[in-house]
Length: 311
Image (cartoon, rainbow, N blue to C red; front, side, top):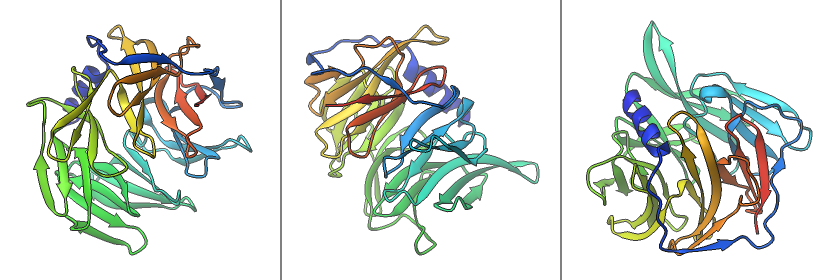
């Protein structure tokens, strides 16, 4: 399974044939990127915490999780697990951070899902040899897969439910199929046929799913798998809160390293593309919108963190 994910990530980062049928617009009053001050390089995949005052980051090769306070400029290490930054999700209220990692238990590899609370207590809510994957948070519950079975963990009640009947969500499963889950019923969509579906995220209204089909670009489909829009090259895309736009990256590489990457804001119909980083030569990777959607944070290949005002 791990080798398959590796191959898919390589595919996802490989050079694609880019063509665009939509209009390309310049961002009005495009701002220069700002280096996040007093933080050394070597931090990657930043996530905004819900209060907009802290950044959750990981280290080289996704090792560990750290919290950087933008006001005090203090860095706090939350964990040092290998792979902790690969699959992470923050609850809407910011009280819980979920991440997956692997550990050795009695000399055998165990896949583990951890939950960090606001007091930095670390609790393993799942640990087994079975493969697992975090999907995200939904109505205060952590959604995750174990052998492609959806689970919902409620941290308030301390309960875990397999195949919950009160959840609707779309995702890419452990075998890289595109899946729609609706109140206990799982449907494999795979709208483009056999292949690898990655970077999937459900729209805020719960009616659509953005996904990347490795080697073929990013699209949006409905709950039945019908393609409703093509976004061309827009990797690791995330929805805005109103569901009208998506923010993602268009990165290029030479097979060994990134050679360029820009951040784009693309309308949900794919007809309008705005290059947010056209005024910088920084290779901008894995953008995330701030809670108020006025800023984007991203990292460079060296692990410098930057922010950019969005209008």
